[in-house]
Image (cartoon, rainbow, N blue to C red):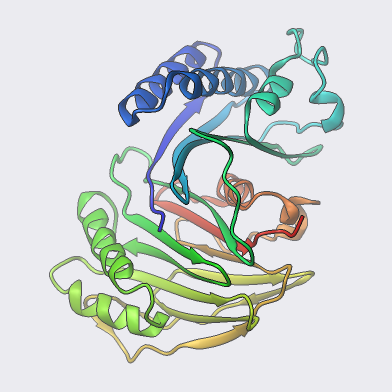
Length: 339
């Protein structure tokens, strides 16, 4: 089971690089990460923030969160910008290459220090960089398993995020949810937490059953929009139930299929929950997002993005399609690629 919060650090000028490093250092110390891991994170944050300040005219943002895989915890850093993009990624990763008069070791240093690294960029597409570090030996995924990546940030000016999410994976199966508490701020966050608590206590139930139990448990809260997907890898199917304006899309190859949710607010007013079943292929992506993100996105507009780490996919969609005036969550789930 995984559900975690994120540290959002806007970086628009060089003076903000040091502050970003200090904030992340305090965060890793508070979370109890060892000195080696914390030191690597500090370097990655410094290099990534420096790139945002030096290579773009409007800057970008860092999203830092705790990740969990099995018994191990780690730190994930996403650097996102809408800059000119990188024309030759392989060359940019080599030491000594720079377009800003710097030593040209930033991207190369990030890729070497990270246990897991991914990048997506191109002329006119901006750049997204993912670096993930684990506190112990890099953990393997179990066979026939799923993986997810998420970006979830509060409305600008708010500390509490009214959106929430959770995933539960086991070999061959997985259940994922996105919740959008009504409105924003602390009361919306309270409603979202109530929904996640029910999810965690009932994760082996069907999506429709979980939504019904959420409805009963959330009557004293503001209520929320909820979507839940249960993925059966071996059967090649997804069971999906949604109430309210959480968007769900399954992408397989060039085909994108929108998933059906019904109107209503879980905890206050909803009709009988209806569950729908959809096909799930080996190359499928499930994208779920709150209404803080517009529905105008198309992964096909980003060559190669669908094959990247799901956290990077979520970050790029958030970067380009967040409305910027509400809580914003994008959750991407896929089969773990066979290597």
